[in-house]
Length: 118
Length: 132
Image (tube, rainbow over all chains, first blue to last red; front, side):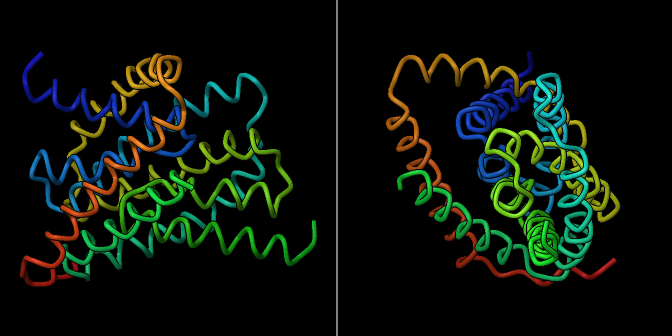
């Protein structure tokens, strides 16, 4: 395993652990590590994070579906407007400075940390 | 289901997608309460169903970022494919130390990340990227 793949594996392990332990996506772990450790630009980190999350969530959703806990209609009801939201969000993200993305992420991380502590 | 609940679920879905597009997260933090409170799912069903909605959003978001030139697909797929390692590590950790210790540890890591990202946000100047 090359050093780069080993570091990606470390991000994957942290994201998987966070996701599995707290029932959320791994995005709050993946994005900062890609920026701070791999010197990704903010936009690249968020785009790449989404690809990783798609794989992580697909595996987890598949496992939950085996137990009959996935409601496809409800997923579509909340997911369809979310697709509209992400088209708008990614378009907006291209038009703001990358440091604004970093700032927004810092706020998100503080909120997440507060939620974990409370 | 009442019309107001349906409208609230649609609005939360849109907000979750918008946030996901801006900062590159899946939106599960908003999906789960939206599904439980407004669409009447149980907490477990909400978390499981949220994951399916996340797949939809993350695939579309990654595709858009790809066309904007912001996707390193190979790295993303490697992280995704290796993430089950983390589930194993997380399970072992959950049995070795208290859940409270894990919560506080992750919160501390997130505060460190927040500090370093905030310094980037405040300390660097750059031009706005030109829209494609």
